[in-house]
Image 1 (tube, rainbow, N blue to C red):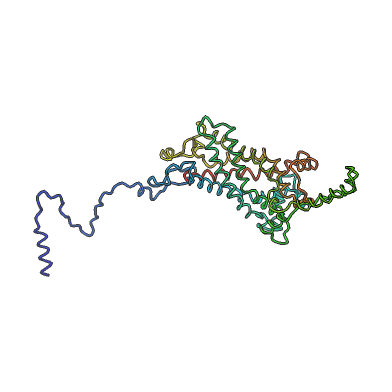
Image 2 (cartoon, one colour):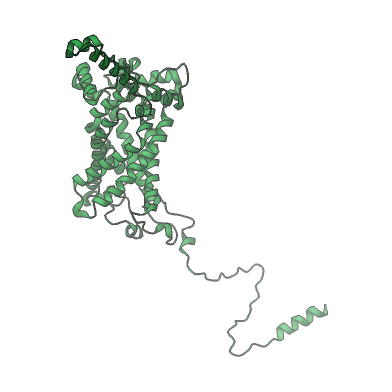
Length: 427
Protein backbone atom coordinates (compact mmCIF):
# COMPACT_ATOMS: atom_id res chain seq x y z
CA UNK A 1 0.00 0.00 0.00
CA UNK A 2 2.81 2.37 0.90
CA UNK A 3 4.82 1.48 -2.21
CA UNK A 4 1.84 2.11 -4.55
CA UNK A 5 1.13 5.54 -2.96
CA UNK A 6 4.77 6.56 -3.20
CA UNK A 7 5.01 5.60 -6.86
CA UNK A 8 1.82 7.50 -7.73
CA UNK A 9 3.08 10.65 -5.99
CA UNK A 10 6.43 10.47 -7.81
CA UNK A 11 4.63 10.24 -11.18
CA UNK A 12 2.45 13.23 -10.37
CA UNK A 13 5.39 15.31 -9.21
CA UNK A 14 7.61 14.57 -12.23
CA UNK A 15 8.35 17.93 -13.92
CA UNK A 16 8.04 18.50 -17.68
CA UNK A 17 11.43 19.31 -19.15
CA UNK A 18 11.63 22.54 -21.09
CA UNK A 19 11.90 22.02 -24.80
CA UNK A 20 10.80 18.41 -24.57
CA UNK A 21 8.94 17.09 -27.62
CA UNK A 22 7.24 14.35 -25.70
CA UNK A 23 3.55 15.22 -25.31
CA UNK A 24 1.97 14.74 -21.92
CA UNK A 25 0.37 11.32 -21.53
CA UNK A 26 -3.38 11.44 -21.39
CA UNK A 27 -5.28 8.84 -19.45
CA UNK A 28 -8.28 7.26 -21.21
CA UNK A 29 -11.33 5.89 -19.59
CA UNK A 30 -12.36 2.34 -20.55
CA UNK A 31 -15.37 3.67 -22.54
CA UNK A 32 -13.46 6.34 -24.45
CA UNK A 33 -12.38 5.24 -27.97
CA UNK A 34 -8.71 5.22 -28.76
CA UNK A 35 -7.32 7.43 -31.54
CA UNK A 36 -5.77 5.49 -34.40
CA UNK A 37 -2.27 6.48 -35.39
CA UNK A 38 -2.17 7.38 -39.10
CA UNK A 39 -0.38 4.70 -41.13
CA UNK A 40 1.33 5.05 -44.51
CA UNK A 41 -1.00 4.40 -47.45
CA UNK A 42 -0.71 0.81 -48.69
CA UNK A 43 -2.23 -0.11 -52.03
CA UNK A 44 -2.16 -3.78 -51.15
CA UNK A 45 -4.27 -3.23 -48.05
CA UNK A 46 -6.73 -1.18 -50.05
CA UNK A 47 -7.12 -3.85 -52.70
CA UNK A 48 -7.11 -6.82 -50.33
CA UNK A 49 -10.87 -6.98 -50.15
CA UNK A 50 -11.46 -6.55 -53.86
CA UNK A 51 -8.64 -8.10 -55.86
CA UNK A 52 -8.72 -7.49 -59.61
CA UNK A 53 -8.95 -10.54 -61.80
CA UNK A 54 -5.72 -12.02 -63.11
CA UNK A 55 -7.52 -13.61 -66.06
CA UNK A 56 -10.54 -11.31 -66.25
CA UNK A 57 -14.00 -11.61 -67.66
CA UNK A 58 -15.46 -9.15 -70.14
CA UNK A 59 -16.51 -6.81 -67.33
CA UNK A 60 -13.14 -6.59 -65.57
CA UNK A 61 -9.91 -4.87 -66.46
CA UNK A 62 -6.55 -6.59 -66.66
CA UNK A 63 -4.68 -5.21 -63.65
CA UNK A 64 -1.52 -6.89 -62.31
CA UNK A 65 -1.72 -7.73 -58.61
CA UNK A 66 0.48 -6.07 -55.98
CA UNK A 67 3.74 -4.30 -56.64
CA UNK A 68 5.94 -5.01 -59.63
CA UNK A 69 7.64 -8.37 -59.23
CA UNK A 70 9.73 -10.67 -61.40
CA UNK A 71 6.46 -12.22 -62.63
CA UNK A 72 5.20 -8.89 -64.01
CA UNK A 73 8.31 -7.97 -65.98
CA UNK A 74 8.39 -8.31 -69.73
CA UNK A 75 9.61 -11.77 -70.71
CA UNK A 76 11.73 -11.83 -73.89
CA UNK A 77 10.17 -14.04 -76.56
CA UNK A 78 13.53 -15.72 -77.24
CA UNK A 79 13.99 -16.78 -73.60
CA UNK A 80 13.48 -20.30 -72.25
CA UNK A 81 10.92 -18.97 -69.79
CA UNK A 82 8.75 -17.64 -72.60
CA UNK A 83 9.09 -20.91 -74.53
CA UNK A 84 8.05 -23.01 -71.53
CA UNK A 85 5.10 -20.79 -70.66
CA UNK A 86 3.81 -20.62 -74.23
CA UNK A 87 4.24 -24.38 -74.62
CA UNK A 88 2.30 -25.17 -71.45
CA UNK A 89 -0.41 -22.68 -72.44
CA UNK A 90 -0.72 -24.32 -75.85
CA UNK A 91 -0.87 -27.82 -74.38
CA UNK A 92 -3.63 -26.88 -71.94
CA UNK A 93 -5.60 -25.15 -74.69
CA UNK A 94 -5.34 -28.17 -76.98
CA UNK A 95 -6.46 -30.60 -74.25
CA UNK A 96 -9.46 -28.43 -73.37
CA UNK A 97 -10.49 -28.19 -77.02
CA UNK A 98 -10.17 -31.93 -77.70
CA UNK A 99 -12.15 -32.85 -74.60
CA UNK A 100 -15.05 -30.66 -75.71
CA UNK A 101 -15.40 -32.48 -79.04
CA UNK A 102 -14.17 -36.00 -78.20
CA UNK A 103 -17.47 -37.82 -79.03
CA UNK A 104 -17.79 -36.05 -82.38
CA UNK A 105 -14.16 -36.76 -83.15
CA UNK A 106 -14.67 -40.49 -82.78
CA UNK A 107 -17.76 -40.51 -85.00
CA UNK A 108 -15.90 -38.53 -87.67
CA UNK A 109 -13.07 -41.07 -87.70
CA UNK A 110 -15.56 -43.92 -88.08
CA UNK A 111 -17.15 -42.14 -91.04
CA UNK A 112 -13.87 -41.26 -92.73
CA UNK A 113 -12.38 -44.74 -92.38
CA UNK A 114 -15.55 -46.35 -93.80
CA UNK A 115 -16.25 -48.52 -90.76
CA UNK A 116 -18.83 -51.06 -92.03
CA UNK A 117 -21.06 -50.77 -88.98
CA UNK A 118 -21.49 -47.00 -89.37
CA UNK A 119 -21.78 -46.63 -93.14
CA UNK A 120 -25.57 -46.48 -92.83
CA UNK A 121 -25.30 -43.23 -90.85
CA UNK A 122 -23.25 -41.28 -93.40
CA UNK A 123 -24.75 -38.79 -95.80
CA UNK A 124 -27.07 -36.89 -93.44
CA UNK A 125 -26.76 -34.32 -90.67
CA UNK A 126 -28.74 -36.52 -88.30
CA UNK A 127 -26.43 -39.48 -88.95
CA UNK A 128 -23.84 -38.20 -86.50
CA UNK A 129 -26.38 -38.01 -83.69
CA UNK A 130 -27.65 -41.50 -84.52
CA UNK A 131 -24.10 -42.83 -84.53
CA UNK A 132 -23.42 -41.24 -81.13
CA UNK A 133 -26.63 -42.79 -79.81
CA UNK A 134 -25.61 -46.20 -81.18
CA UNK A 135 -22.18 -45.99 -79.53
CA UNK A 136 -23.73 -44.89 -76.24
CA UNK A 137 -26.21 -47.80 -76.22
CA UNK A 138 -23.47 -50.36 -76.77
CA UNK A 139 -20.55 -48.95 -74.76
CA UNK A 140 -22.09 -46.14 -72.64
CA UNK A 141 -20.04 -42.96 -72.08
CA UNK A 142 -16.78 -44.89 -72.23
CA UNK A 143 -17.48 -45.72 -75.86
CA UNK A 144 -17.84 -42.04 -76.77
CA UNK A 145 -14.41 -41.32 -75.30
CA UNK A 146 -12.62 -44.43 -76.57
CA UNK A 147 -9.12 -43.43 -77.55
CA UNK A 148 -9.36 -40.13 -75.64
CA UNK A 149 -6.54 -41.05 -73.25
CA UNK A 150 -4.23 -41.52 -76.23
CA UNK A 151 -5.62 -38.27 -77.62
CA UNK A 152 -4.61 -36.32 -74.52
CA UNK A 153 -1.16 -37.94 -74.48
CA UNK A 154 -0.70 -36.79 -78.06
CA UNK A 155 -2.53 -33.48 -78.02
CA UNK A 156 -0.69 -31.89 -75.08
CA UNK A 157 2.75 -32.04 -76.72
CA UNK A 158 1.13 -31.42 -80.12
CA UNK A 159 -0.59 -28.22 -78.97
CA UNK A 160 2.40 -27.15 -76.92
CA UNK A 161 4.85 -27.56 -79.79
CA UNK A 162 2.47 -25.97 -82.30
CA UNK A 163 1.85 -22.77 -80.32
CA UNK A 164 5.45 -22.59 -79.08
CA UNK A 165 6.79 -22.99 -82.61
CA UNK A 166 4.31 -20.45 -83.96
CA UNK A 167 5.36 -17.82 -81.44
CA UNK A 168 9.05 -18.38 -82.16
CA UNK A 169 8.72 -18.64 -85.96
CA UNK A 170 6.40 -15.65 -86.08
CA UNK A 171 8.83 -13.64 -83.96
CA UNK A 172 11.67 -14.51 -86.33
CA UNK A 173 9.73 -13.83 -89.54
CA UNK A 174 7.68 -10.82 -88.42
CA UNK A 175 9.71 -8.16 -86.60
CA UNK A 176 7.56 -5.13 -87.29
CA UNK A 177 4.26 -3.87 -88.63
CA UNK A 178 5.65 -3.61 -92.13
CA UNK A 179 6.29 -7.38 -92.13
CA UNK A 180 2.76 -8.33 -91.02
CA UNK A 181 1.89 -9.81 -94.41
CA UNK A 182 -0.55 -12.69 -95.08
CA UNK A 183 2.23 -14.77 -96.66
CA UNK A 184 4.47 -14.53 -93.59
CA UNK A 185 1.56 -15.29 -91.27
CA UNK A 186 0.58 -18.31 -93.37
CA UNK A 187 4.14 -19.65 -93.46
CA UNK A 188 4.58 -19.23 -89.70
CA UNK A 189 1.42 -21.22 -89.06
CA UNK A 190 2.21 -23.92 -91.63
CA UNK A 191 5.74 -24.49 -90.32
CA UNK A 192 4.55 -24.66 -86.72
CA UNK A 193 1.97 -27.28 -87.68
CA UNK A 194 4.59 -29.39 -89.44
CA UNK A 195 6.90 -29.21 -86.42
CA UNK A 196 4.15 -30.51 -84.13
CA UNK A 197 3.32 -33.37 -86.54
CA UNK A 198 6.94 -34.52 -86.69
CA UNK A 199 6.99 -34.93 -82.92
CA UNK A 200 3.61 -36.58 -82.29
CA UNK A 201 2.54 -38.57 -85.36
CA UNK A 202 2.86 -42.14 -83.93
CA UNK A 203 0.50 -41.19 -81.10
CA UNK A 204 -1.98 -39.95 -83.69
CA UNK A 205 -1.95 -43.35 -85.44
CA UNK A 206 -2.62 -45.10 -82.11
CA UNK A 207 -5.49 -42.72 -81.35
CA UNK A 208 -7.12 -43.28 -84.73
CA UNK A 209 -6.92 -47.05 -84.38
CA UNK A 210 -8.41 -46.93 -80.88
CA UNK A 211 -11.27 -44.81 -82.15
CA UNK A 212 -11.82 -47.07 -85.18
CA UNK A 213 -12.31 -50.20 -83.06
CA UNK A 214 -16.01 -50.87 -82.38
CA UNK A 215 -15.92 -54.35 -80.86
CA UNK A 216 -17.52 -54.14 -77.44
CA UNK A 217 -16.80 -57.72 -76.31
CA UNK A 218 -13.44 -56.93 -74.73
CA UNK A 219 -11.75 -53.77 -73.58
CA UNK A 220 -8.95 -52.80 -75.95
CA UNK A 221 -5.98 -51.06 -74.36
CA UNK A 222 -3.30 -48.83 -75.82
CA UNK A 223 -0.80 -51.67 -75.40
CA UNK A 224 -2.99 -54.01 -77.44
CA UNK A 225 -3.25 -51.47 -80.24
CA UNK A 226 0.51 -50.82 -80.24
CA UNK A 227 1.25 -54.54 -80.42
CA UNK A 228 -1.24 -55.00 -83.25
CA UNK A 229 0.14 -52.10 -85.30
CA UNK A 230 3.74 -53.22 -84.78
CA UNK A 231 3.04 -56.79 -85.92
CA UNK A 232 0.95 -55.85 -88.96
CA UNK A 233 2.43 -56.34 -92.38
CA UNK A 234 1.04 -56.31 -95.89
CA UNK A 235 0.57 -59.63 -97.63
CA UNK A 236 3.71 -60.71 -99.40
CA UNK A 237 3.43 -60.26 -103.15
CA UNK A 238 3.57 -63.47 -105.12
CA UNK A 239 6.99 -63.83 -106.71
CA UNK A 240 7.04 -64.48 -110.43
CA UNK A 241 7.45 -68.08 -111.45
CA UNK A 242 10.38 -69.23 -113.52
CA UNK A 243 8.06 -70.13 -116.41
CA UNK A 244 6.45 -66.68 -116.51
CA UNK A 245 9.83 -64.98 -116.38
CA UNK A 246 11.18 -67.13 -119.16
CA UNK A 247 8.21 -66.40 -121.41
CA UNK A 248 8.22 -62.68 -120.63
CA UNK A 249 11.95 -62.02 -120.87
CA UNK A 250 13.13 -64.89 -123.08
CA UNK A 251 15.80 -65.72 -120.50
CA UNK A 252 17.34 -69.16 -120.37
CA UNK A 253 15.62 -71.47 -117.91
CA UNK A 254 18.49 -71.50 -115.32
CA UNK A 255 18.61 -67.69 -115.37
CA UNK A 256 14.83 -67.42 -114.98
CA UNK A 257 14.91 -69.80 -112.01
CA UNK A 258 17.70 -67.76 -110.38
CA UNK A 259 15.76 -64.50 -110.80
CA UNK A 260 12.61 -66.09 -109.35
CA UNK A 261 14.54 -67.42 -106.33
CA UNK A 262 16.13 -64.00 -105.73
CA UNK A 263 12.73 -62.30 -105.90
CA UNK A 264 11.31 -64.73 -103.34
CA UNK A 265 14.23 -64.14 -100.97
CA UNK A 266 13.96 -60.37 -101.35
CA UNK A 267 10.25 -60.43 -100.51
CA UNK A 268 11.00 -62.32 -97.31
CA UNK A 269 13.71 -59.86 -96.28
CA UNK A 270 11.87 -56.63 -97.11
CA UNK A 271 8.53 -57.54 -95.59
CA UNK A 272 7.37 -54.25 -94.08
CA UNK A 273 6.81 -54.56 -90.32
CA UNK A 274 7.70 -52.78 -87.12
CA UNK A 275 8.07 -49.11 -86.36
CA UNK A 276 7.34 -47.99 -89.90
CA UNK A 277 3.71 -49.02 -89.33
CA UNK A 278 3.34 -46.12 -86.90
CA UNK A 279 3.99 -43.67 -89.74
CA UNK A 280 1.26 -44.74 -92.13
CA UNK A 281 -0.23 -41.70 -93.80
CA UNK A 282 2.62 -39.45 -92.67
CA UNK A 283 3.13 -37.84 -96.10
CA UNK A 284 -0.51 -36.78 -96.61
CA UNK A 285 -0.54 -35.57 -93.02
CA UNK A 286 2.28 -33.16 -93.77
CA UNK A 287 0.63 -32.03 -96.98
CA UNK A 288 -2.66 -31.55 -95.14
CA UNK A 289 -1.04 -29.70 -92.25
CA UNK A 290 0.36 -27.00 -94.52
CA UNK A 291 -3.05 -25.56 -95.49
CA UNK A 292 -4.69 -26.45 -92.16
CA UNK A 293 -2.27 -24.80 -89.75
CA UNK A 294 -1.37 -22.04 -92.18
CA UNK A 295 -4.96 -21.01 -92.85
CA UNK A 296 -5.89 -21.46 -89.19
CA UNK A 297 -3.34 -18.98 -87.84
CA UNK A 298 -3.70 -16.64 -90.81
CA UNK A 299 -7.49 -16.46 -90.48
CA UNK A 300 -7.28 -16.01 -86.71
CA UNK A 301 -4.82 -13.13 -87.06
CA UNK A 302 -6.80 -11.41 -89.83
CA UNK A 303 -10.09 -11.80 -87.96
CA UNK A 304 -8.42 -10.46 -84.82
CA UNK A 305 -7.17 -7.41 -86.71
CA UNK A 306 -10.70 -6.80 -87.97
CA UNK A 307 -12.14 -7.08 -84.46
CA UNK A 308 -9.57 -4.61 -83.09
CA UNK A 309 -10.38 -1.85 -85.57
CA UNK A 310 -11.07 1.51 -83.97
CA UNK A 311 -14.79 1.45 -84.76
CA UNK A 312 -15.23 -1.95 -83.06
CA UNK A 313 -12.59 -1.76 -80.31
CA UNK A 314 -14.93 -0.41 -77.62
CA UNK A 315 -17.10 -3.51 -78.04
CA UNK A 316 -14.52 -6.20 -78.80
CA UNK A 317 -11.30 -5.34 -76.93
CA UNK A 318 -10.89 -6.22 -73.26
CA UNK A 319 -10.33 -3.06 -71.15
CA UNK A 320 -6.81 -2.70 -69.78
CA UNK A 321 -5.15 -0.48 -67.22
CA UNK A 322 -2.33 1.85 -68.27
CA UNK A 323 0.13 -0.34 -66.42
CA UNK A 324 -0.98 -3.44 -68.31
CA UNK A 325 -0.71 -1.59 -71.61
CA UNK A 326 2.88 -0.62 -70.82
CA UNK A 327 3.69 -4.28 -70.13
CA UNK A 328 2.44 -5.47 -73.53
CA UNK A 329 5.23 -6.77 -75.73
CA UNK A 330 5.99 -4.79 -78.89
CA UNK A 331 3.59 -5.57 -81.75
CA UNK A 332 1.38 -7.60 -79.38
CA UNK A 333 -2.31 -6.67 -79.76
CA UNK A 334 -4.55 -6.30 -76.69
CA UNK A 335 -6.71 -9.34 -75.82
CA UNK A 336 -10.26 -9.57 -77.14
CA UNK A 337 -13.43 -10.08 -75.17
CA UNK A 338 -14.63 -13.65 -74.80
CA UNK A 339 -17.30 -13.57 -77.51
CA UNK A 340 -14.98 -11.86 -80.00
CA UNK A 341 -12.15 -14.32 -79.34
CA UNK A 342 -14.52 -17.28 -79.76
CA UNK A 343 -15.78 -15.91 -83.09
CA UNK A 344 -12.26 -15.42 -84.48
CA UNK A 345 -11.29 -18.94 -83.43
CA UNK A 346 -14.45 -20.45 -84.92
CA UNK A 347 -13.86 -18.68 -88.23
CA UNK A 348 -10.27 -19.94 -88.27
CA UNK A 349 -11.49 -23.50 -87.74
CA UNK A 350 -14.08 -23.25 -90.53
CA UNK A 351 -11.63 -21.96 -93.13
CA UNK A 352 -8.80 -24.33 -92.23
CA UNK A 353 -11.07 -27.38 -92.19
CA UNK A 354 -12.42 -26.61 -95.65
CA UNK A 355 -8.94 -26.12 -97.11
CA UNK A 356 -7.43 -29.35 -95.77
CA UNK A 357 -10.29 -31.85 -95.57
CA UNK A 358 -9.62 -33.91 -98.76
CA UNK A 359 -6.08 -34.66 -97.61
CA UNK A 360 -7.39 -35.54 -94.16
CA UNK A 361 -9.72 -38.18 -95.66
CA UNK A 362 -6.79 -39.71 -97.55
CA UNK A 363 -4.72 -39.74 -94.36
CA UNK A 364 -7.40 -41.55 -92.35
CA UNK A 365 -7.72 -44.22 -95.03
CA UNK A 366 -3.97 -44.80 -94.98
CA UNK A 367 -3.79 -44.92 -91.17
CA UNK A 368 -6.34 -47.75 -90.90
CA UNK A 369 -4.87 -49.59 -93.88
CA UNK A 370 -3.89 -52.52 -91.70
CA UNK A 371 -7.48 -53.29 -90.73
CA UNK A 372 -9.36 -52.32 -93.88
CA UNK A 373 -9.22 -54.56 -96.93
CA UNK A 374 -6.20 -56.82 -97.42
CA UNK A 375 -3.78 -54.57 -95.55
CA UNK A 376 -1.90 -53.55 -98.70
CA UNK A 377 -0.12 -50.24 -98.21
CA UNK A 378 -1.42 -47.77 -100.74
CA UNK A 379 0.19 -44.52 -101.79
CA UNK A 380 -1.59 -41.17 -101.68
CA UNK A 381 -2.37 -41.37 -105.39
CA UNK A 382 -3.77 -44.90 -105.09
CA UNK A 383 -5.98 -43.96 -102.14
CA UNK A 384 -7.25 -40.89 -103.99
CA UNK A 385 -8.06 -43.00 -107.05
CA UNK A 386 -9.94 -45.54 -104.93
CA UNK A 387 -12.00 -42.80 -103.28
CA UNK A 388 -12.77 -41.22 -106.64
CA UNK A 389 -13.78 -44.57 -108.11
CA UNK A 390 -15.99 -45.50 -105.15
CA UNK A 391 -17.73 -42.20 -104.39
CA UNK A 392 -16.60 -39.57 -106.85
CA UNK A 393 -15.45 -36.17 -105.65
CA UNK A 394 -18.02 -36.33 -102.84
CA UNK A 395 -15.94 -39.06 -101.25
CA UNK A 396 -13.22 -36.53 -100.44
CA UNK A 397 -15.71 -34.56 -98.33
CA UNK A 398 -17.53 -37.40 -96.56
CA UNK A 399 -18.06 -36.39 -92.95
CA UNK A 400 -17.29 -32.72 -93.66
CA UNK A 401 -20.54 -31.66 -91.98
CA UNK A 402 -19.58 -33.34 -88.73
CA UNK A 403 -16.07 -32.02 -89.34
CA UNK A 404 -17.43 -28.48 -89.16
CA UNK A 405 -19.45 -29.33 -86.06
CA UNK A 406 -16.28 -30.65 -84.45
CA UNK A 407 -13.54 -28.32 -85.69
CA UNK A 408 -15.36 -25.00 -85.31
CA UNK A 409 -15.96 -25.29 -81.52
CA UNK A 410 -12.59 -26.99 -81.09
CA UNK A 411 -10.70 -24.14 -82.76
CA UNK A 412 -12.75 -21.54 -80.90
CA UNK A 413 -12.01 -23.22 -77.56
CA UNK A 414 -8.34 -23.71 -78.39
CA UNK A 415 -7.63 -20.09 -79.35
CA UNK A 416 -9.74 -18.71 -76.50
CA UNK A 417 -8.04 -20.81 -73.81
CA UNK A 418 -4.61 -20.11 -75.28
CA UNK A 419 -5.10 -16.34 -75.31
CA UNK A 420 -6.41 -16.38 -71.75
CA UNK A 421 -3.53 -18.59 -70.60
CA UNK A 422 -1.13 -16.07 -72.12
CA UNK A 423 -2.72 -13.40 -69.92
CA UNK A 424 -2.41 -15.70 -66.91
CA UNK A 425 1.25 -16.48 -67.66
CA UNK A 426 1.95 -12.80 -68.53
CA UNK A 427 3.44 -13.52 -71.95
